[in-house]
Image (cartoon, rainbow over all chains, first blue to last red; front, side, top):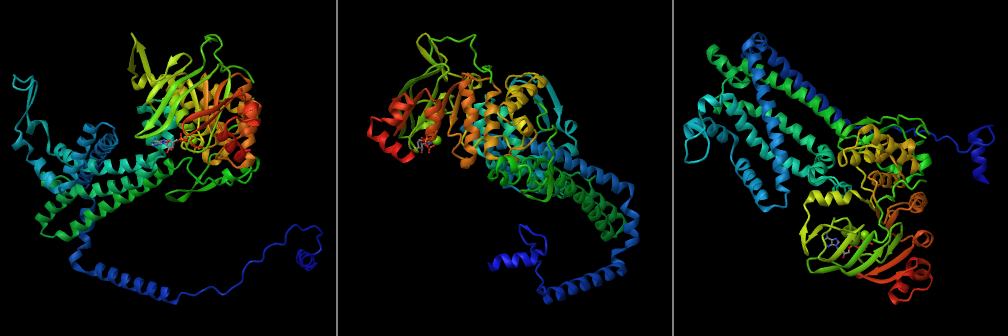
Length: 338
Length: 266
Ligand SMILES: Nc1ncnc2c1ncn2[C@@H]1O[C@H](COP(=O)(O)OP(=O)(O)OP(=O)(O)O)[C@@H](O)[C@H]1O
Ligand SMILES: [Mg+2]
């Protein structure tokens, strides 16, 4: 009785109101005075530091401006990018191979991959790069042919491998060990039923891997790989151990050795590194979105098939990334095929 | 419904579609299947029931060589599964040959196992394109027909995550049918579904049975078994306890273990 009266009252004169509109909550919001205090404090301290930096002669801002787009610096930046790209591409390919090897049922194959990881993850990359730099002392010639017979082809190691190539080899072989673990985690994250379904359809192991397992593991693989690319970009500054001196950091050190003013060139190098990492972060965002396809909430499973699409909003939360992904609506109209 | 999936031309009616002879399977010391012998004729539907852990899934997986037998012989359409026989000796098959045998045996799983990164249509098209190497346009036409056949023509471009469980299972059935199998294996196809979605999947399976498909169905849906199955096999503890006409086994079970099980599920 009383319920009907109240419903009638809140719905006004309109007779069959199914449900009264919910009233928004009006409440004094909880205040966070300390948050404000800290925020203001941080802003003030930051501003003071900025103002101080702007007028501090040691930073030598005019020199920063002068060298930021210096030809030698931008050429070095290109070398840094090239080192990063080549090394990462090789490392990813090798990493996938090593990861698959580690999951192989063949114990020899498994052990080889394990040994590789043990060596390349267990020693510092700087040491590895230094050793690679000495490769032409260790192996002065490279012979191709049957052992203990006259070689078919013979090279001076120094002629065959430029410092750049050696740097790429050193960086990529080290990185492959880390990529292998990332890829392995991704492969293991894919539901076993997927492999089973693919096998039951008559797909070969290679097809199952490339078409079913790897694409799904991408979602798990990409975020840490993005980290690795950014880390690689910075690790290229270590190739001075090879010694390759044409990349960004070594080049800016060399320039400052002439000008006796290291700080502005360090700032220049840092700005370039920051620019590249920012670009990489944008790229990672789009890649993650691409491989989140088809992975969303499974709420529709609980609904009646007829209403499931009606209730379907077109935007869903995507696992592992904050921005919502938009779903492509079905192309054909109902009954379009038959 | 057409009978398009039944290869009548090459049929050898005298050869059973599935012939299991003393099939045994152990995982370590755990003997899961103990000398199972049974036969499924061409065009027949066999329902396999039994308590959890009785080895029903394992038996299905043996049929398409997802599990390797420990003992016994299993053949599908007269062809030994997993081995080649010549001069009285058995030779283990290469993975490629085993994969070739699996093409002709469709399998539907309890958890659907659709590929989540592909749309319903892509799920159905994947194997015919990759495994059989058929031209894409032709495969797409067949795939759309199959989706229409399971009542999902309009859902072709949806990802599995945006389909209900019943719809996903129907896509999974279409995916298996796309390879034009001569035998379909269903492992509790409706067990993961909400009760109101079970009917739509069973309807598709009934249609398939009517079209002449040979099917082995692990299920707890006794109504379906009664209506569709030609034979019903009750398994417990890795052995076939009772087998026969579904009506007979269900209404008048001979064995105590069958009676105990049926009193729980009926
Ligand atoms: N890969 C495996 N390794 C070891 N044991 C296994 C494996 N697969 C199955 N088993 C064992 O085999 C037995 C039978 O399992 P199976 O899945 O065939 O039973 P089921 O009859 O299908 O049961 P359910 O109704 O629960 O699906 C179980 O005891 C299970 O633990
Ligand atoms: Mg089972």
